[in-house]
Length: 304
Image (cartoon, rainbow, N blue to C red; front, side, top):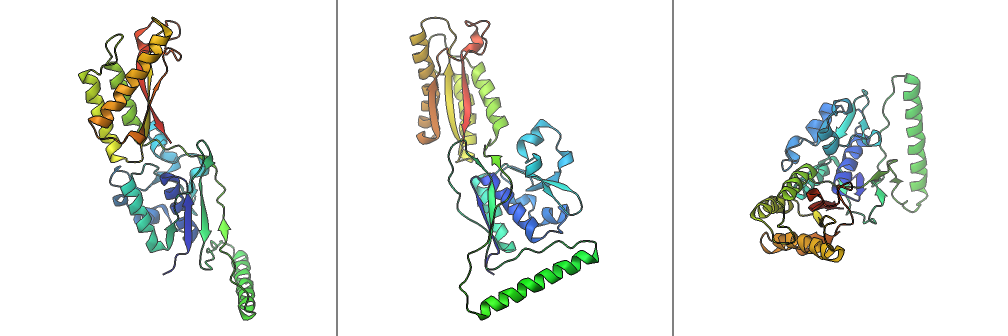
C-alpha cells in the first residue's frame, strides 16, 4: 500500500520519535501496550532497550533522564492519560530496523535534513496520497455528529473538485510543534568512565608518550566507536601552569595527538572521526592550585 505519512528528522533519535508521533496520529486510541506490541524491544537489540518505555512518572533516575526522552514537549500523551516516553539511544542497525518496521503501518522516513551546528531542530510529518488522519472520538454524541458532518462536508468538497478536473494539490505539510536541541550522546556514560580511567593513567611529566594503562582504556574507547560508526570525538589535552606556557601548549597538543594517532594506527578508527586539540594551561581544573596534578589531563568530547 502507498505510504500515508512521511517523517522528516535531523538525527536518528528525533526521527524515531517522529515515527512514534506518526503512529499516534494514525492510531489515536492506541494504548501503551499497543505501542509496545507494535514496536517491540527486539527492534533495538544493540542497545538492549525497548523502543517504547513507560509512563513519564517512572523516569526518575539520572540514567533514565539520559537515555529516554523525558522533557514535557517530548512526551506522547495517550487518550487514557498515560504520558509515554520513547528511548533515544539508537545504533545505525537498530535505527534501520525500526524504519523498515514502520513501513507496515504505512509510515516512511525521508533522508535526514541537514542542519547547522547548534541549530535547534526536531521532526515534522507530511501526509501523503490524500491521507486524512482520524479524529479521536469524543464521549459526547454531540461531538461525534459534528465530526461526522465535517467529514461529510470534506468528502463533498473533494467530489466537487474531482468532478471539475482540478489539479492535484500538494501534500499537506504538518509541522509538529516541538523545538528541541539536537544533541546525540551515544553511550555517554561509557565514554565518561573511559575518560576517567584515561586521566588516571597519567603521562610521564613533561612527555607525551602513552602509558600501557592509557593504551588499554583507548582500546575500550575504540570498541565503542566501532559499534557506533556515527560517533565522532574531540580529544583535548591540558597541562598545569607549571613551566613555560609555550612548552605547555605544545605538550598538550602532542598528548592529544598521541591518543588520536593510537586510535587511528592501532585500532583502525578513521581519522575524520577524531580531532586533537591542545589547551595548554588555559583551562585549569583546579584554579586555586595552578600547579596541581589534576590540571594535567585529557578530556573526551562527543561531537554532534
